[in-house]
Length: 413
Image (cartoon, rainbow, N blue to C red; front, side, top):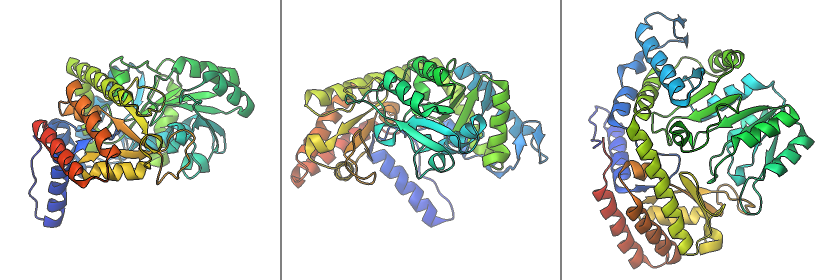
C-alpha cells in the first residue's frame, strides 16, 4: 500500500499526503489515470532526477552519463520488444510534446493535417484550433457518424477533398475498435503520411487485445501513464530509419532539452512489468470490467455514445439521460467520492468547459482489484445518484457505500 511521506517542507508534505488520502478514498474512473506500482514510484523518485544529459545514449553533451545511458537504453529495448518495433524514442515529457515532435518529423510547418474532431473523441494535438497542431498546421477534422462510429468511407471522401499531407488516427474518447488498416488505405489513396496516437489503448495494443497500428502507420505515439500503467510521459515509435532520425532531432533539440531520467526510469520499469504475463491478465480484466460496466448502464436505459465499448472506456450522454451537463454530473459524483471527467460528445451543444457528457474508464479501479461484480454495483450507484441528485440524504448514503468499496480495495504498492 502507498504510505504517507515525511519531509521538512510541511506545506508540500501536507498536500501530498492529502492527495494520497483523496486517492485512497475515491473511486477513480478517469480513463487516462491509473495507479503505478511501488517500483515505478521508487524509480521515478530516485536520484536520477539529479542528472542532466542532453542528447542520446553514448552521444551526450554532458559527462557522467554512463548510468543514465543504461537506463535509457533499457527503456528503448523494452519498448521495442513490447510493441515489436525497430526504433523508439522514450524522452518525451508528455503526450503533447511527442505528438508535436512526431508531426514535425512527418510534415513541414503549414502542411494540411487531418485528425479526429475533438467533440467526436479526438485530442487537442490532432488539429484543434487553439493547440499548436491547429496553429502551426492547416488543420481539418473528421467526425463520427450519427451512431457515434467512424465512417471510413466518409473519411476517405473528406481526405480526397482536403488532400492532407498527414492523417492522424487515434482518440482520447472513442469506445470502439480503430481499424488502422482502413486508415492506411485512405492515406495511400491521397498520398498522406499516417500517424497513430495510441495513448489510451497502448496497454491493450501491447498485449494483442486491440489491433496494432505498427505495420500500417509511419509513426506511432503514446503516453505511458494510462493503460500502460507507467510513469507519466510520452513515447514515439516507427519502423522507418529515416523517420526515426527526424523524430530524434525533433524531440531534441527540436522541442525539448535535457531528458528527465527519473521519468525514463519509471517508464522502463513499467515496460518491464508490461512484458510479464500478468499484464495481459490485467488488460483482459480491464476489458471485461468496461463491458459489464457499460452493459449495466444500458440496462438502465442510459444513453451510451457509440452504443457500447470495445476498449477500456465509454461515454454517457448525461444531458439526454439525466438532464444534467457534464460539469454538473462530475461535481455531483465528486461529492460522493467518485471521480470522472466531463467530456464533449458528438454534436455537442455545450462549451468544452460545460459539456453534455462524462467519460468513464476502468483501468485504475481494475488495478485496485475491482472485478465485474463491483462495476455492476458502481453503475447502479452512479445511476441512482444522478437520477436523484437533489436528495441529500440519499447522496450521503451512497457516499458511505463508495467509501466501503474504497476501503475494501485499497491502492496497492
